[in-house]
Length: 256
Image (cartoon, rainbow, N blue to C red; front, side, top):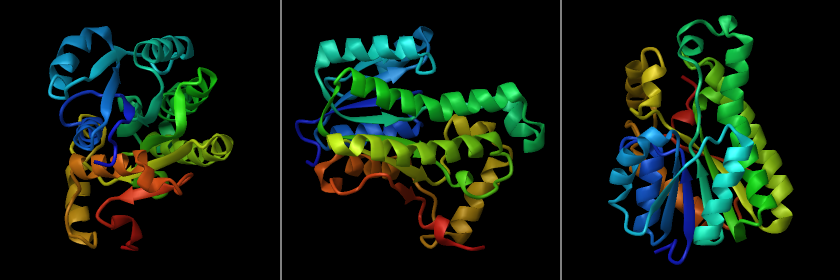
């Protein structure tokens, strides 16, 4: 098992269909102790019921868009569990109207919100974890991105801009944290029917196109993305940092 004796934090768990859950199960299957953060105390009961499938797991409520709240949660996690070997940032949000309307109509507030929640929170996670000395040597930070960061996809709009900022942040964070031995990477997942995907107009057509055009002629699963994250958490990826790893059945390479 490639994550035996490692401890990882999965941030942004929502339900059993989320990529975060796929990553958590893969990490647990590979021997890791898995911790979670979730948004909204009102969701605690359903989250704790979900993660009960993973022995030894714990869940912490956390509003990652609030630096003070994030720091308080990290302090609690560190005190109760010790240092971490990996963190998955699976946090993103954009206002519905900014996904449904043409990008040109994105409001200033909507633009700031999408970038704050979807990109800056990863920077804050990295900074606060470093300041608290929360990461073990050779720890691995991973975030989730999507092809819409580099190509125009109808309905992705401001989230594409936020993911582009996130990917650039991965490179700068990798440079900043590299001297400490900490690695920083992103997994660019193929489209998956998650709760977040429901906000994208005509999402079903994107799934169809991937099945028709991707070299592997199939869509990806949360398990496949979770396996990619588990690999990046592991020592087997110790020479990889600052990279965007595409796990999308090869769709990214296609020109049509």
